[in-house]
Image (tube, rainbow, N blue to C red):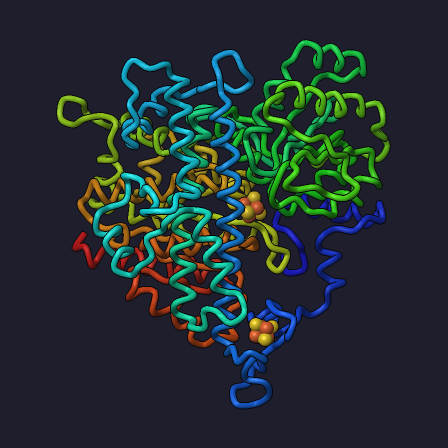
Length: 629
Ligand code: SF4
Ligand code: SF4
């Protein structure tokens, strides 16, 4: 295993094919990069003004100890960390803003409709919007305006979702980290980390905490809620995962990126009679629409669309030689796809003015003409089928069955199966709380985040999850971690056999897998909601619960923001890739130690996923002991 890039055979075979085809992959570029810069790795280089770049010697007392302006290593590290949080929060929040705009243009006969009316009314009620005797679209538009206002309101604080217990809100209030407006927090970070501004590591990190909360309980939360309104609240679905979902005789179209406003339209347009007759004309058996990265998560949660793979498989999909088009919008799209696609017949189609990519085919996605645009893009994909070079096609056989679609609502409906309605109400988290309190389930873990070529592809995700479920800890997964689980078969109901006796029984009774797919990266807000509602149900704070989080293979700034808001929610979080903070001793102390005094949780850094899982299990047991359960 040691020398392999991935634990996944399909990926290994395609890395081999890349060599035969003389094309490079991310692993080749990693080799070309040689040893990473030690200053950057420790977070002690600064280039935020033109007096620099400055870098601090990693040895205390030897070499440069301050930047030209006098900033210490801790200040530089904290500023860099804060800017990562701001970048991550901005990405999630801009995504949410787009969805809110789409909701604002939704109409009964238009391209976008309201799919979950109950959720619109629930949001209206929560936000004191008058909805009695009003047309659902009028209510939806007001809901969208309320949401949009959360981005830039100049007074007051963010509207914190109902799931957050009072005790948690009070902790944020006392620390001064209650977020104000979503965009404002990002702007404040960019301001305060400008040369000659904030020069105190602890204050910079508190600012990062506030900004991350504006993502988790603001941008991401709204993104998820409004996507459910527009495209439907997820429910249980069957699907398949891994590159073996590509088809020999069909037009393979990969939808990759993040925002469901594009992918949903592509899903609809794939059924258009004109597109179908074009498919017949080119002699294919059909269109095989498959997802990649978080777009995959969005469309699989709602429609069971198959998942071709996660972050590190995007190039490998093209290397199969069987992909007619990769359609992308924003975030986590390797610019390398431009060059790579030239070696195959694949059309690399970018669609967002927020993510123009040189040498891609650019078809701007205009939400006002969404369906027409989607059809236009698909037409290009279908026409490209005749250019496929059959002799250069290799589709690995690997694919696994997965059960997906576990939003909070769907989890509750599964829990209802074990409620005796003569004794208890349905529609609550009580059965889950009972299992946790009785010890049948020891606790729960959220395993989330990306892939990173610094670690063996999917190894961290899969080994950690296996260890956790074997110890009766139920796992919820999102993002590329979810796809790793699906590919490893951990999202099939059969995987219950890998679980400890308590979790196995729960899985069998509810007919669920031991690892639940909760969606995309913005859908981490579903995990926040689940934990918050469980805490409220038990009259506890979120930090009291035997709940832990992990990002074993994280790489993006979004993951930094996610990790920070999860810790600020009182959930201890394990990182499997060392963040660029080790050059700042005070910063390390705050993140891995003092944050516990502030928010009741902290970061743990452990690159061995099995050891990390053991620490997580230990932590869960300590929390149980503290609760006396
Ligand atoms: S802000 Fe200070 S440490 Fe950073 S580049 Fe400018 S002078 Fe150097
Ligand atoms: S988990 Fe990471 S790599 Fe995957 S889509 Fe989300 S941010 Fe991108």
